[in-house]
Image: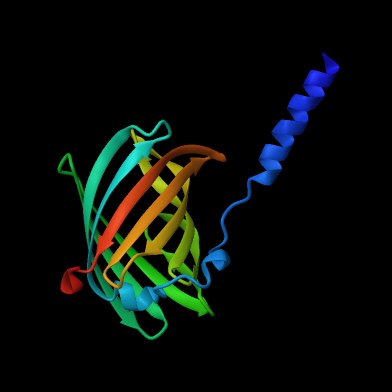
Length: 180
């Protein structure tokens, strides 16, 4: 019995320690190269959905994004329209703080968001103050954006609370002035 417990513990430990998070650097040589400011300057459209941790579709939405670049700062004005008719606005202010390094703020983001670009990939991490019932909860987002062409980008975001996965957001971005 003790050997079974030790074997189970050893396997569990190796699975936990063997699972490492992705790093943007592993995508350094992927193409096309993503220039975050260039991609989001002007109008960008996005369609997305939130899935629960079991994968069940919870909510769909469309986003009209207007991006303005001034020097080392990108301002994204995001206008959300949800499938139930609810609307929401989020305004991001994103600053380039180093080679492929970014930080950003928005009204419902707790503290600062931090991001790194590499090759065709951008990873963005932040804590969001998310409305929930008659209050709000703080959830962490680990966004991964993958540039497919100069006009199309996919986004997958894991959403966690206290380290536990609560769901996932999937987005598709498209530049309307550069239709495929």
